[in-house]
Image (cartoon, rainbow, N blue to C red; front, side, top):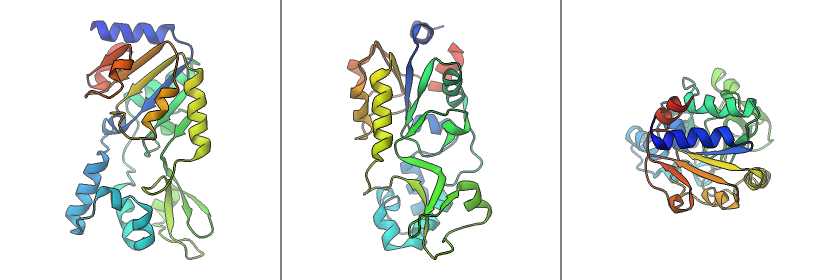
Amino acid sequence: MKQQYQQLSDIISESHNIVFFTGAGVSVASGIPDFRSMGGLFDEISGDGHSPEYLLSINHLEDDPDSFINFYKKRLLLADKSPNTVHEFIAGLEQSGRSTGVITQNIDGLHRDAGSENVDELHGSLNEFYCIECNKTYHKIEVMNNDISYCVCGGAVRPDIVLYGETLNELTVLSAMSKLQAADTLIVLGTSLVVNPAAYLTTYFSGKNFVIINQDETPFDSEANLVINDDMTDVINTII
Protein backbone atom coordinates (compact mmCIF):
# COMPACT_ATOMS: atom_id res chain seq x y z
CA MET A 1 0.00 0.00 0.00
CA LYS A 2 1.29 3.46 -0.85
CA GLN A 3 2.47 5.51 2.10
CA GLN A 4 -0.25 8.11 1.44
CA TYR A 5 -2.91 5.41 1.37
CA GLN A 6 -1.67 4.02 4.67
CA GLN A 7 -1.72 7.52 6.15
CA LEU A 8 -5.34 7.94 5.02
CA SER A 9 -6.29 4.57 6.48
CA ASP A 10 -4.67 5.53 9.81
CA ILE A 11 -6.46 8.90 9.89
CA ILE A 12 -9.84 7.26 9.31
CA SER A 13 -9.17 4.63 11.98
CA GLU A 14 -8.25 7.28 14.54
CA SER A 15 -11.11 9.69 13.74
CA HIS A 16 -14.51 9.84 15.43
CA ASN A 17 -16.29 12.72 13.66
CA ILE A 18 -15.43 12.52 9.99
CA VAL A 19 -17.16 14.81 7.51
CA PHE A 20 -16.94 14.19 3.77
CA PHE A 21 -17.15 16.98 1.19
CA THR A 22 -17.77 15.65 -2.32
CA GLY A 23 -17.88 17.00 -5.84
CA ALA A 24 -18.38 15.96 -9.44
CA GLY A 25 -15.52 13.46 -9.45
CA VAL A 26 -17.55 11.14 -7.24
CA SER A 27 -20.43 11.24 -9.73
CA VAL A 28 -18.15 10.71 -12.74
CA ALA A 29 -17.11 7.41 -11.16
CA SER A 30 -20.76 6.32 -11.50
CA GLY A 31 -20.77 7.18 -15.20
CA ILE A 32 -22.38 10.60 -14.81
CA PRO A 33 -20.74 13.17 -17.11
CA ASP A 34 -19.45 16.38 -15.62
CA PHE A 35 -21.55 19.50 -15.90
CA ARG A 36 -19.89 21.02 -18.95
CA SER A 37 -20.07 17.72 -20.79
CA MET A 38 -23.82 17.64 -20.19
CA GLY A 39 -24.17 21.10 -21.64
CA GLY A 40 -22.02 20.29 -24.62
CA LEU A 41 -24.02 17.17 -25.44
CA PHE A 42 -27.24 19.15 -25.30
CA ASP A 43 -25.82 21.85 -27.57
CA GLU A 44 -25.01 19.20 -30.18
CA ILE A 45 -28.62 18.04 -30.16
CA SER A 46 -30.35 21.42 -29.89
CA GLY A 47 -28.06 23.48 -32.06
CA ASP A 48 -28.93 26.47 -29.88
CA GLY A 49 -25.38 27.07 -28.75
CA HIS A 50 -26.43 28.00 -25.22
CA SER A 51 -23.84 27.85 -22.46
CA PRO A 52 -24.18 25.15 -19.80
CA GLU A 53 -24.74 27.93 -17.27
CA TYR A 54 -27.74 29.24 -19.18
CA LEU A 55 -29.20 25.79 -19.73
CA LEU A 56 -29.20 25.21 -15.98
CA SER A 57 -30.38 28.70 -14.98
CA ILE A 58 -33.54 30.26 -13.61
CA ASN A 59 -33.49 32.51 -16.68
CA HIS A 60 -33.82 29.49 -18.98
CA LEU A 61 -36.77 28.21 -16.96
CA GLU A 62 -38.48 31.60 -17.03
CA ASP A 63 -37.66 32.33 -20.69
CA ASP A 64 -38.70 29.00 -22.13
CA PRO A 65 -40.14 26.39 -19.73
CA ASP A 66 -40.55 23.81 -22.52
CA SER A 67 -36.86 24.10 -23.45
CA PHE A 68 -35.77 23.91 -19.81
CA ILE A 69 -37.89 20.81 -19.19
CA ASN A 70 -36.57 19.23 -22.38
CA PHE A 71 -33.02 19.87 -21.20
CA TYR A 72 -33.36 18.36 -17.74
CA LYS A 73 -35.28 15.34 -19.01
CA LYS A 74 -32.64 14.57 -21.64
CA ARG A 75 -29.53 15.36 -19.65
CA LEU A 76 -30.25 15.25 -15.92
CA LEU A 77 -32.63 12.35 -15.27
CA LEU A 78 -30.14 9.51 -15.13
CA ALA A 79 -32.22 6.58 -13.94
CA ASP A 80 -29.63 3.97 -14.86
CA LYS A 81 -26.85 5.34 -12.62
CA SER A 82 -26.06 3.74 -9.28
CA PRO A 83 -23.87 4.55 -6.28
CA ASN A 84 -20.25 3.51 -6.59
CA THR A 85 -17.61 2.34 -4.13
CA VAL A 86 -16.99 5.86 -2.84
CA HIS A 87 -20.69 6.50 -2.08
CA GLU A 88 -20.95 3.14 -0.33
CA PHE A 89 -17.75 3.71 1.66
CA ILE A 90 -19.01 7.08 2.90
CA ALA A 91 -22.42 5.63 3.82
CA GLY A 92 -20.77 2.76 5.66
CA LEU A 93 -18.72 5.06 7.87
CA GLU A 94 -21.85 7.03 8.76
CA GLN A 95 -23.75 3.85 9.60
CA SER A 96 -20.89 2.69 11.82
CA GLY A 97 -20.91 5.99 13.70
CA ARG A 98 -17.48 7.14 12.50
CA SER A 99 -18.83 9.88 10.24
CA THR A 100 -21.36 12.61 10.97
CA GLY A 101 -22.33 12.80 7.32
CA VAL A 102 -21.53 14.23 3.93
CA ILE A 103 -21.70 17.65 2.33
CA THR A 104 -22.03 17.43 -1.44
CA GLN A 105 -22.06 19.73 -4.43
CA ASN A 106 -23.64 16.95 -6.50
CA ILE A 107 -27.32 16.90 -7.45
CA ASP A 108 -27.67 13.23 -8.46
CA GLY A 109 -28.92 11.98 -5.08
CA LEU A 110 -26.54 9.01 -5.12
CA HIS A 111 -25.29 9.58 -1.57
CA ARG A 112 -28.82 9.01 -0.25
CA ASP A 113 -29.29 6.10 -2.66
CA ALA A 114 -26.18 4.52 -1.12
CA GLY A 115 -27.63 4.77 2.38
CA SER A 116 -26.24 8.06 3.69
CA GLU A 117 -28.83 9.86 5.80
CA ASN A 118 -27.03 12.97 7.03
CA VAL A 119 -26.53 14.60 3.64
CA ASP A 120 -26.30 18.33 3.02
CA GLU A 121 -27.03 18.68 -0.70
CA LEU A 122 -25.74 22.21 -1.28
CA HIS A 123 -27.15 22.42 -4.79
CA GLY A 124 -30.30 20.40 -4.15
CA SER A 125 -31.28 16.99 -5.48
CA LEU A 126 -32.71 15.53 -8.66
CA ASN A 127 -34.63 13.05 -6.52
CA GLU A 128 -37.22 15.73 -5.72
CA PHE A 129 -39.30 18.02 -7.95
CA TYR A 130 -41.92 20.70 -7.38
CA CYS A 131 -44.40 22.88 -9.26
CA ILE A 132 -43.26 26.49 -9.65
CA GLU A 133 -46.86 27.71 -9.25
CA CYS A 134 -48.48 25.72 -6.42
CA ASN A 135 -45.36 24.06 -4.91
CA LYS A 136 -46.85 20.55 -5.18
CA THR A 137 -43.99 18.08 -4.75
CA TYR A 138 -43.10 15.10 -6.92
CA HIS A 139 -40.46 12.38 -6.63
CA LYS A 140 -38.12 11.68 -9.54
CA ILE A 141 -39.62 8.23 -10.10
CA GLU A 142 -43.10 9.75 -10.36
CA VAL A 143 -41.88 12.37 -12.84
CA MET A 144 -40.09 9.79 -14.97
CA ASN A 145 -42.68 7.01 -14.91
CA ASN A 146 -45.55 9.37 -15.74
CA ASP A 147 -43.53 11.72 -17.97
CA ILE A 148 -44.69 14.71 -15.91
CA SER A 149 -43.70 18.11 -17.27
CA TYR A 150 -46.49 20.31 -15.95
CA CYS A 151 -48.50 20.14 -12.75
CA VAL A 152 -52.27 19.61 -12.67
CA CYS A 153 -52.49 23.36 -11.93
CA GLY A 154 -50.62 24.15 -15.14
CA GLY A 155 -47.32 25.20 -13.59
CA ALA A 156 -44.00 23.86 -14.84
CA VAL A 157 -42.53 21.04 -12.73
CA ARG A 158 -38.85 21.65 -12.01
CA PRO A 159 -36.17 19.70 -10.15
CA ASP A 160 -35.47 20.85 -6.60
CA ILE A 161 -31.94 21.98 -7.41
CA VAL A 162 -30.23 25.34 -7.13
CA LEU A 163 -30.17 26.88 -10.59
CA TYR A 164 -27.76 29.54 -11.77
CA GLY A 165 -29.22 32.83 -10.59
CA GLU A 166 -30.54 31.30 -7.35
CA THR A 167 -29.00 31.20 -3.88
CA LEU A 168 -28.13 28.19 -1.76
CA ASN A 169 -30.68 27.05 0.81
CA GLU A 170 -29.81 28.79 4.09
CA LEU A 171 -30.74 25.85 6.33
CA THR A 172 -28.61 23.47 4.25
CA VAL A 173 -25.64 25.82 4.49
CA LEU A 174 -26.06 26.19 8.27
CA SER A 175 -26.22 22.41 8.66
CA ALA A 176 -23.02 22.02 6.64
CA MET A 177 -21.25 24.67 8.70
CA SER A 178 -22.28 22.92 11.90
CA LYS A 179 -20.90 19.60 10.65
CA LEU A 180 -17.60 21.17 9.68
CA GLN A 181 -17.15 23.02 12.95
CA ALA A 182 -17.71 19.83 14.97
CA ALA A 183 -15.58 17.51 12.83
CA ASP A 184 -12.16 16.16 13.76
CA THR A 185 -11.47 15.10 10.17
CA LEU A 186 -12.54 16.56 6.82
CA ILE A 187 -12.09 14.43 3.71
CA VAL A 188 -12.62 16.20 0.38
CA LEU A 189 -13.30 13.92 -2.58
CA GLY A 190 -13.54 14.69 -6.28
CA THR A 191 -13.78 18.46 -6.30
CA SER A 192 -11.39 21.19 -7.38
CA LEU A 193 -12.72 23.46 -4.61
CA VAL A 194 -13.07 26.45 -6.92
CA VAL A 195 -16.87 26.85 -7.01
CA ASN A 196 -18.04 29.28 -4.35
CA PRO A 197 -19.80 29.70 -2.04
CA ALA A 198 -19.69 25.91 -1.65
CA ALA A 199 -15.89 25.60 -1.56
CA TYR A 200 -15.62 28.45 0.94
CA LEU A 201 -17.51 26.35 3.48
CA THR A 202 -14.40 24.24 4.04
CA THR A 203 -12.85 27.22 5.84
CA TYR A 204 -15.21 26.50 8.75
CA PHE A 205 -13.28 23.31 9.47
CA SER A 206 -10.69 23.62 12.24
CA GLY A 207 -10.21 19.98 13.19
CA LYS A 208 -7.07 17.86 13.21
CA ASN A 209 -7.06 16.20 9.79
CA PHE A 210 -7.78 17.90 6.46
CA VAL A 211 -7.54 15.42 3.58
CA ILE A 212 -7.98 16.17 -0.14
CA ILE A 213 -8.34 13.35 -2.67
CA ASN A 214 -8.63 14.70 -6.21
CA GLN A 215 -6.99 14.05 -9.55
CA ASP A 216 -5.89 17.67 -9.89
CA GLU A 217 -4.51 20.31 -7.56
CA THR A 218 -6.86 22.57 -5.59
CA PRO A 219 -6.43 26.06 -4.08
CA PHE A 220 -6.61 24.47 -0.63
CA ASP A 221 -3.83 21.88 -1.04
CA SER A 222 -1.35 23.93 1.00
CA GLU A 223 -3.76 23.92 3.95
CA ALA A 224 -4.34 20.16 3.92
CA ASN A 225 -2.14 17.76 5.87
CA LEU A 226 -2.71 15.00 3.30
CA VAL A 227 -3.23 15.44 -0.44
CA ILE A 228 -3.67 12.43 -2.74
CA ASN A 229 -3.77 13.13 -6.49
CA ASP A 230 -4.96 9.69 -7.56
CA ASP A 231 -8.20 8.17 -8.78
CA MET A 232 -10.47 8.17 -5.74
CA THR A 233 -12.03 4.78 -6.45
CA ASP A 234 -8.55 3.24 -6.56
CA VAL A 235 -7.73 4.92 -3.26
CA ILE A 236 -10.89 3.74 -1.51
CA ASN A 237 -10.70 0.24 -2.95
CA THR A 238 -7.15 -0.03 -1.63
CA ILE A 239 -7.90 1.00 1.95
CA ILE A 240 -11.16 -0.92 2.51
